[in-house]
Image 1 (cartoon, rainbow, N blue to C red):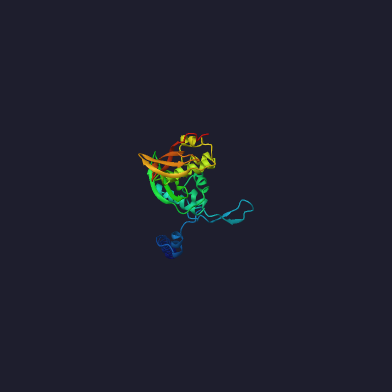
Image 2 (cartoon, rainbow, N blue to C red):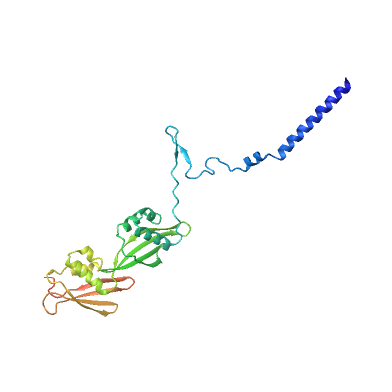
Length: 264
């Protein structure tokens, strides 16, 4: 009996050794399925799910497609880029695109202006922790300008924060003619687009609109021009406007010299 027991014990020991070796081998060399499972990307929520993945509705547990996450606005690293982005959006009547580069108040101000034949970009100039960027284009009154106030920085990006669209007159006569036309229409607000407050006040002292002033010419007198108009029917009734400025900044009527008796 003893030899049989010894043989059985040896057999059991060998079997255990074989099983242990198999376990060790399977641990050191995982199967192809195991390797594929390890190599597969994680599908944990929030780590690899796309922005448009399905979500579960809170009502009834139904699954619905989530809305795509909107793309973040572009970072405009130069003030001229911000001005151009807003300008192009204005030309295309695209409010959402305009808001990517400008404040809501600036967008409202610019979109309130009807797009006109494409103005020309004249550059950005640094002023008081920001930039003034300019566009201009010819119109019936001289030069119509769009001024954009741009603030921000290269790292955070630039945005247009304010819009101004004054009239800029290309020559002295254009400014003087605009003031005369506004006076004939009895429109002080329009007159102020071409003249100083003092010049408008003096011009509106004139009472007789039955005889529109007739332009006779502008004469250079440093640092500007004297633009003359004949008024009324009497010889020597001459209205003289003092016009100052320049081609880039535009021209404006600074003062008006009314003829004697012209205020009656």
